[in-house]
Amino acid sequence: MHSTPLAHGNDRIYYPGEVEDVAAERNLADGGVVLADRTLDDLRALASESGTALSF
Image (cartoon, rainbow, N blue to C red; front, side, top):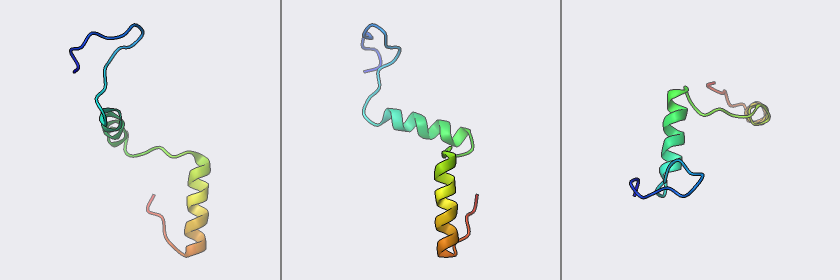
């Protein structure tokens, strides 16, 4: 599939699930998933409300 000629304006052909695999590899290489500040705030609030400790 990757050897198929590319459509104008595209630099790669992805098979189903490949975009997610590439993102997962990038996240692991970068040390994990980057979360938005708002998401982190929400997680901290939920952890506080439930008495759960966050490990990050």
